[in-house]
Length: 151
Image (cartoon, rainbow, N blue to C red; front, side, top):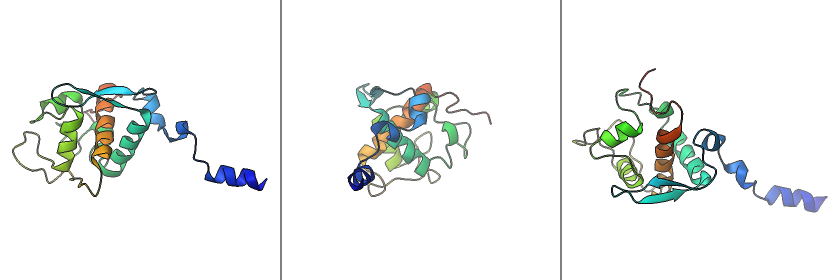
């Protein structure tokens, strides 16, 4: 009996338990998915665990202003793929979103954004920001209602 208690206490939860239900249900990710990695169109592969980690970062750092991919401070600009593509420079790939989170700029890229929170390397690694970016891009691609401008 004691052996069973020790085994269950120190055994990590099943992999499926760490996959956020939103990722599998609404982002439709159960296998690795390719997501645009850079301006040249190179693809990067992300797993459901990566997107679950990205969702957690989104909830911890972005959701106050970007509920459901909307942008509360400026509802005309959302996290939809069309709006991400329309930014200057475009933010419709992993590398561009990682750059943006390190040094946020306004939509037309003419000045720093003081509304959007900058994430330093101490706050999040490049890998974590790639997971966050992958979550945003996959949600923009497939999640129902993501990036709405109508409240």
